[in-house]
Image 1 (cartoon, helix red, strand yellow):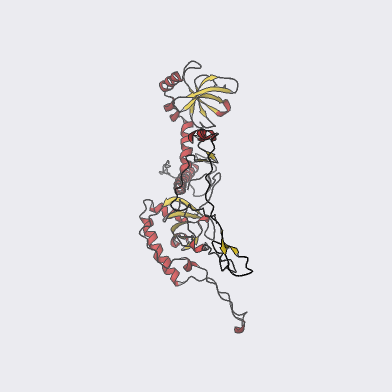
Image 2 (cartoon, one colour):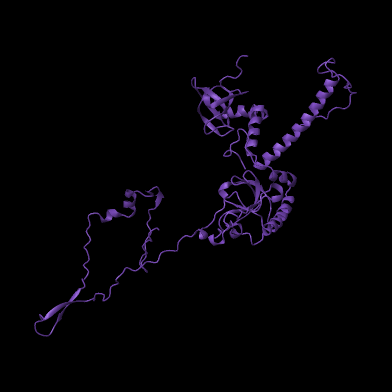
Length: 166
Length: 257
């Protein structure tokens, strides 16, 4: 697949390093192969040059002419609802989740572990029941491989609970 | 000890300098600025005649009668001291800083009722409840014993992680006997030679005294009652009984406790 995100005027990017780490900016102009002029009027990032290896490009792009003034960038930023669509993106949600995880206290981590192990147990039990049922009725391994003797395919009961989603 | 500063003579007013230290040996006003502030230019090239103070004579001439006495002699106005100490006086030294007098500090994250993670000793890894700081600065903790088998115990705060989880133990009344003396190790005296049978005396293992058992019970029932008042009481009990451990890519200096 060809590249989808380019260093271009209007490209929204996340600053990955430096004092503005984690903030959203928009590329205003390309200075050279390694540097761009960025501006983040809505994220308190002043217009400045930034090295491209300090930027992570997002899929969002807004429209304004190159080296447009901050005012124009701000207007385009607001019209395109960059902040809202960014917050909806999986990327932003992952960042938020990571932050939340880092804020957990020892007790919270314990509670989380407990909840996870409970969920996993429910899931395992229901999975095993499903597997058993489907191996018995020949859905999984074929009817020939069934064990000899009295292990007949069971009449279909309600074999498993639905796995509780956490 | 830092040298004591010279006290200014009584009744004499000491002026305060307009120029002050900004830190790192830098003063607010430069030499030039102070030159103008003090209006030192007014005094340049001027000479102030030095006042001459009358000099008090140290000796006095006295006439002396009698022959072969020279007729006169110079006598000191102020007589010299008659007695000099043979030994320098021993200065009184400030009282020694004794360990028992040291001021104790408690880490900000730790306060009575905090759940602590023990990092040292035979109970390391356990989560226990902090009760109070003893006079020696050590922390008094309890498991409670019924939950994680950690008894009433002392531990240094260096070997402890304070968590944000707190139990309201304001209603817990600790027996007053719980002090440093209470927890001191009881050392057995060696059998004297005269008694003989040095090989027959068996080493006695540690036995928990009845006093400790009753105290443990008394404290733990109160602490457990306090735990039950916590909104997350069921999980909290499981939490206290579980050991602390680090998983992969968990770094204690990056974790919140």
